[in-house]
Image (cartoon, rainbow, N blue to C red):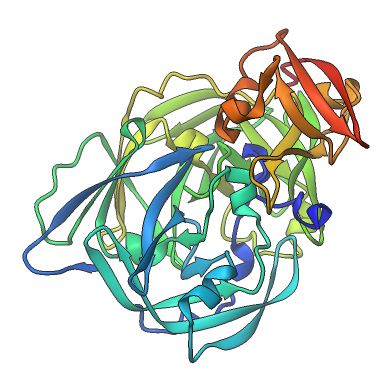
Length: 417
């Protein structure tokens, strides 16, 4: 049912708070991880990736079949398969079931296997720990506009020095021990529970500068999510709006959107960084916030070329062509996704309170069949997202199909924060 999936976490940049924190109980931390390696004398490979809503999409072969598009995500531990159809098509055997629960998720069933072979480029990992969700809870395909089969994280990053060239949409991964030319500023990272953390300076609304411990999350489209300070909700900025920061089949993750006055990492300074501020009372009951203040996502990370070295505990960051691009939130206030079964149907999901979309009379489940008098087959979801944050005071004309009727809505884009 569409209503079941329209609230997936991968909706828009503001929806990507914590994609898979609920999967930390998957029993893999006590397993002997099988890492990736090159065969023969190869030590390095370059691989182009797709960039969609700031996320890194790479081709992965599973049990020598594929390629399947996966999100390369520093925020996950074990390999996660989110597209359930892959189970039947690959004839998985000797799998056991577990229960998975966490932020925004009801307890659900997942399959666990250590008989999976994963291949990225010419690097492969035998018996990689894998969780396979019984159903696609996140609707990654619908919200990214291409078929997505899962997420790959720690095992890949822990196997190589991984160089992410965001501006070039290129990934370079190098075997440990091989010569690497590092570029930019060196920043220590701490690996905890298979995920990288970094310290950055964050200015609060009262101009207090704090050293915040943040998860480095390439699998989150947003720039920042500030969750905790001194055991309480992170101080809210004076200018803010209520927002749905994430949703799943069990309900909404509510909070606020605002701008952090100042953010500094590795000697590089940013101003007016858009951040989510989730409801601390809700998320603190679901996840342990004692060890971190929030996370930094790909809308900020993409401003750098980043070289991760998990094994030695550091990364290098160097500004790229995106560095001076200002941080902008979407100026329409709604989520658009593609039909789970028919990817050519653009549907409206949740709509923010008092947003331009709400003011214009748009409703959840409306189908968009044209934008600015152009048919939808000329747009990708990525292009539509960029259009909706292209500038305040612009107008967008949407052709809407609802209850067997077609009509037009004029939406005036608005910078709300």
